Length: 199
Image (cartoon, rainbow, N blue to C red; front, top):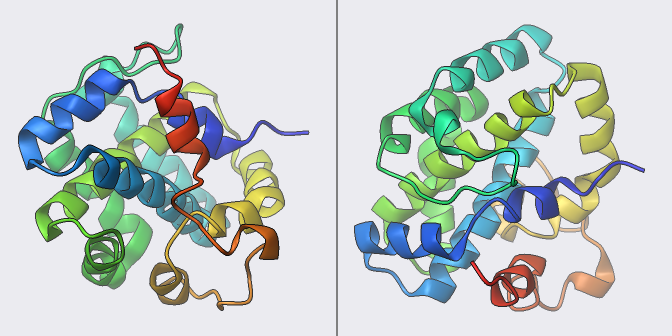
């Protein structure tokens, strides 16, 4: 059984990072957490859609390995304890390759569905793209193995992202788990982890 990618990724984000991001964007903490939650799922589904392109996947992990963001993560403790605004430029390089011409539409959808400013949605997606691919690089995720993991966890990941984004990424409203459909965000695992985090 593969580890749940979303849970693993959410654990990297300390409360200090959320506070630091809020100093940049002046959003409600709960909305910012929802935006990060949705963005991580969105990046994972974007990776799922592109994972069969082995050369692109290898290019993305090579890009992230030399970023300042990658150097900020304490992989030994599994935490991102601080963040500066390097992700604004560094993450954009990844998003352009993952989403092609859909990047602007996805950004607006995160903004509208979560209820945050467009600028915040754009930067949270940049941040999330770097976090996801930093994790893939650190774990030395082989493209074939990652493809299998994403396929196995696809349904759960789809439940964590707004319907409009799912449709943009090529999935129907029926591709959800019924028991989770009543509240994708209020019962998010990330909220639970964050509320029980002492850091």
